[in-house]
Length: 437
Ligand code: ASP
Image (cartoon, rainbow, N blue to C red; front, side):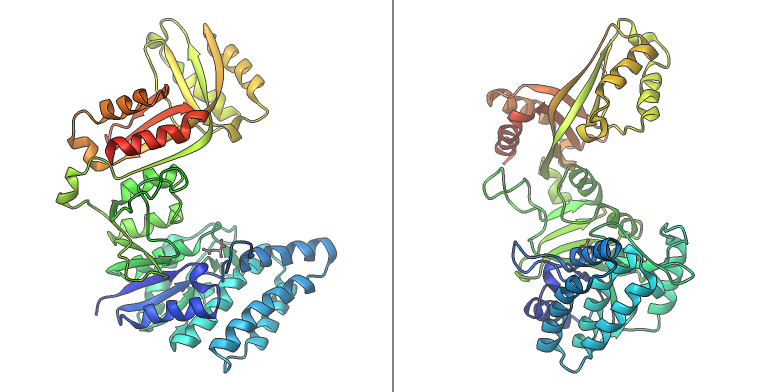
């Protein structure tokens, strides 16, 4: 029998009604054998996610030695869900156990993980599936590093004897049983790890949107949905801010060649976005797949005559960045110029010393930091088959009156990145979208 792993995000677990929808989705397909859940998320825009309430509890414990009032909010949410869905489940007792554990273990990660734990208990009871605690199968080292090989072995062994199970996302444990968590949104990673370990045919990621969109809907009106994305395209778009999936969740499924299907719990008939290892032939004719971008960058611009023949020039400049622990995004170079694109957050408050150090290290004719830059990535495998894509993109920006401050086409030819002044950002995204619509 084929196996599908279905992961349900916070909105899909937010209240009894959402959980019922999620459970109905699971029940509609016998191949959905392993279900991974997030903690209950927001029910409405001003609502607070259970995970945030848990962090609040931890904070209160540290500050006042008591977190009763915050814990009551959590208790109320889970009690309401359990009373509506599973009055037979002794939720009160589960919650008391969790609270005792909080005093006993007292680590922020233990606190944070309990939302997934409780949501997993409810979902397992509701579906009549086994509950497999992530602490048994997702392995971290004592130092809190995720251990991929040990996790894989444990998952394989455990799940080979459990046909249908619910596994909470986001956390795992080390050998001594101490809880560790992934970074925020990490239930996506748990789902991907399980899909890979059991050799799933598909990893379904159920969320509250119909998958990826070709552009940001806050900028472009009603952008089209992306039906199919390759892992590589996803990586490029996600890097530039298209955040539907935790970026680290791509690696396990990619290694196993397992497609990911992003689906909407609240519109289950929509096929969502399929993320696949290789694009289908039909799509080779589509030039671009999506546009994503981010504000908040600066360019460190360096000029020096004969730079090109000075061996080790770029290395020396980069060693300055390394010295200050500054990561960079792109580094397009000209004959006697070098531009290094960095996030503003990386250099905040350090511009002066950085310029000074570069000056002393490579003695350039000119060095400056140009701020107020936004980056826009136009991504698509189809670009590498079509001459003139860059011309079309640049032409569209020129017509819109947008000056390109930097341009970088990766050698994979599936991503053109332009840097524009931040005040032109929205205009530029719309112009590119229109050109390729
Ligand atoms: N509940 C966790 C968070 O809010 C993890 C997740 O939902 O994936 O970040």
